Length: 182
Image (cartoon, rainbow, N blue to C red; front, side, top):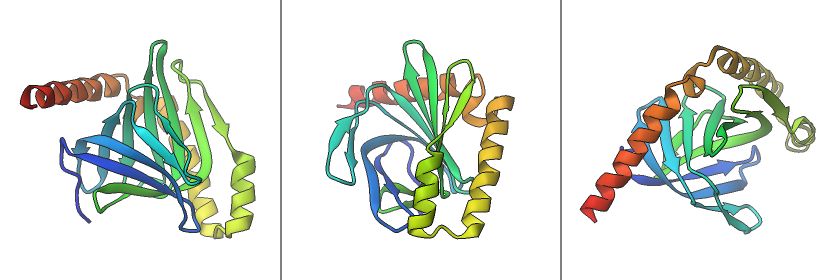
C-alpha cells in the first residue's frame, strides 16, 4: 500500500458495503502518513454526497484513520471546544491519492466534556439487512464500538488532551510554510 506524503493534499472517499461511493472530501492536508496511521486536516473543504449534493465543512478538523481499527475519528474544532465524530468503518487504505474506507453507519458523537452518544443504530440495522453485512463484520463492529468507548473514557488516541494541540499546531505551521512558499 502506498503511504500519504506529509504536506500533500489528498481526498477522502467513503464507500458503503455494496461498493457505492457515499461521500468525498475534496481536499485534506496530510499531517502524518505511515503504513498504519493517517492524520489529516481540512477546513472549509468541499464535500460531495452520493446524490451529487455538495456542502462545505464549517470548521477546521483533524482526521484520524488507522489501518487496523474499524473506526475513524473526525475532531471538529469549534469555538466552544472540540467535538468528535467517530465513524464505525473498515480500516482505511490509501489508493490513487485518496484515503478510502467503508462506512458502516454506526457513529459515536463525543462532546467537549467527553460525554458521548451512539448514533444511527436504526440505519445500521436497515443497511445490515439490505446489504447483507456478514455476521463476522457485525461482531467486529460491535467489538470496535466497545474499543472506541474505552478510548474515549481513557482519553486515548485523538481523545488525549495534547492530541488536538499537537496536530492543530502542525497544521498551522504547514499552512504558514505553504503561504510563505506561494
